[in-house]
Image (tube, rainbow over all chains, first blue to last red; front, top):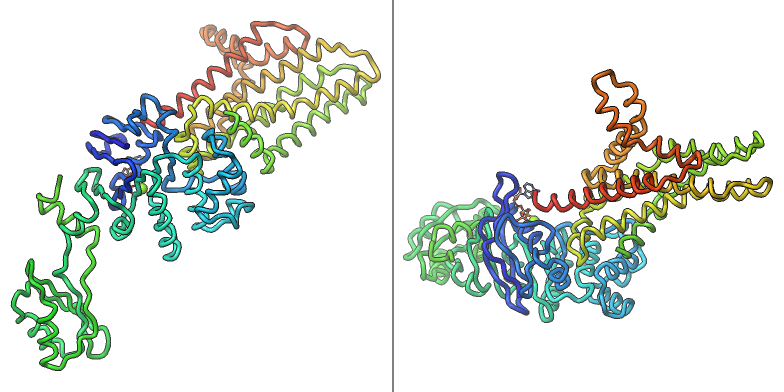
Amino acid sequence: MIEISNLTKRYGQKLAVDDVSFHVDRGEILGFLGPNGAGKSTTMNILTGYLSATSGECKINGIDILEDPIRAKRSIGYLPEQPPLYLDMTVKEYLGFIYDLKKAKQPKSAHIKEICEVVKITNVYNRLIKNLSKGYRQRVGLAQALIGNPEVLILDEPTVGLDPKQIIEIRSLIKKLGKKHTIILSSHILSEIQAVCDKVVVINQGKLVADDTTANLSHNMSNDHRYTVLIDGPENEVYRSLCGITGMKDVNLLGKREEGVYEYSVEAEEGVDIRREIFKRLAERNWPMLGLRSSEMTLEDIFLQLTKDSGGIK
Amino acid sequence: MGAIFRRELKAYFSSPLGYIFLGVIYAISGFYFWYILANQANYIQYVFSNMFTIVLMVVPLLTMRLMSEDKKLKTDQLLLTAPVNITSVVLGKYFAALVVYIIGVSSTIIFQIVLATFATPDWNVFLGNYLAIVLIGAALISIGILISSLTENQIIAAIGTLAISLFIWLLDSIASALPAGFEWISSIFSSLSFMTRYNDFVSGILNVSHILFFVSFAAVFLFLTIRALEKKRWS
Ligand SMILES: Nc1ncnc2c1ncn2[C@@H]1O[C@H](COP(=O)(O)OP(=O)(O)OP(=O)(O)O)[C@@H](O)[C@H]1O
Ligand SMILES: [Mg+2]
């Protein structure tokens, strides 16, 4: 459905995207993951025909975006990083304009109404866009992308700047849209991609560092062997006791959390489950364990792991 | 093109810009018309000969936001990723500005009708004059849209357009003021003159080559605007 081959983009001397290739099949939701400045927006802007690549090609539905831009663009709905809104229009006027601009074929008012229901903006339909909150503007941006019912949706960080409730709503909306559309969704939040996407492409400093299913990626990189523990007990003794556990690789005192309560980060050796052993030791000495959670893997951890463990790179 | 044209046209009147433009044009041209009436003359050309300077000053108001606003709001991403080509984006915006401009200079039609109530006017001369002011506008707006596509700052776009318009206004004076040895520059400048061509129209001479000059002038600047937008994609 979407094919990107050997895409390279230079801004003057700066190499923003470096020989990136991947593809998305019909009906898939692809997560496009990378830190700030990785080249996500640049890639998406090339894919939608806003920018031209320095070399390489992009095909949507088998149509090259450079060779037949109009036909390729007909099957794309794009929500750029900053929603492209005319602030002096009402939602109604704006979506009507988009409908005309895209020369959509669906019956106009029914189509626009339906989209407004889907993204939940019916209640601001007659308001000026400049008076809408960030979350609503984002939704109007999404509505804009949906007009004309394009097969492909390209969404650049659609949840950035939203409150937690809205983030959850937008994510589940995207998941729902994924049943009928092929979607590329960019983000710099790993958990977001895991929650929504079937496949993930990781990019760092313009280079592709991983291209896999979300399940595989998190499996390969699972770090069940790192935990943060909160313990009520004398710091030095607890520390020594933890260090004495067989299979323990590393213990770090993170700091005092309450009177007499300290937080530690512990790391076990590969394949060893130390949770029971920790509990036993603490119970013997009568030091209450107030919390135990596995440390979340951050995007940085992934990059570190992907770049040091060459097996992870494709 | 139709969608963009309609949106732009509406945008002129959902902000004060369109009203300011029309207000200024109506006020100043109205003043000259009142002057004719006060002197009991039947000479619409007096309005037209001053109209040139007026439109030079107010056309930048009309064109300053055409392209630069889209750059600033990032709505250019919307327009350039929609299934339309750049040419129709530029033409849609251009014609919206031209229509507002024509609404402005059409105050002269009313003046002419008023004059017609107490004297028999020469409609041919009027039509020639009217055509001339529309052509001048078509050319000036094409300059404005190009400048506006080069910046995201509306004020810079307006000042840039005004500067180039003033330069065009002064072409004849510069040409005649150049010292000996620069005759070739003088002749280029004179051959580009808006003023001499306009004055020909005003004095009742309808010269087809003049019409072609303004139309091709606008076409060249529109082409450059399209190129400027295309080039940005490659930067
Ligand atoms: N117009 C431009 N001119 C020069 N450099 C640019 C331009 N646009 C982007 N860059 C650079 O290209 C690189 C990739 O930028 P891009 O916006 O694609 O990153 P991103 O992955 O979308 O980041 P973010 O998560 O911050 O949105 C960055 O280093 C950026 O500084
Ligand atoms: Mg970005």
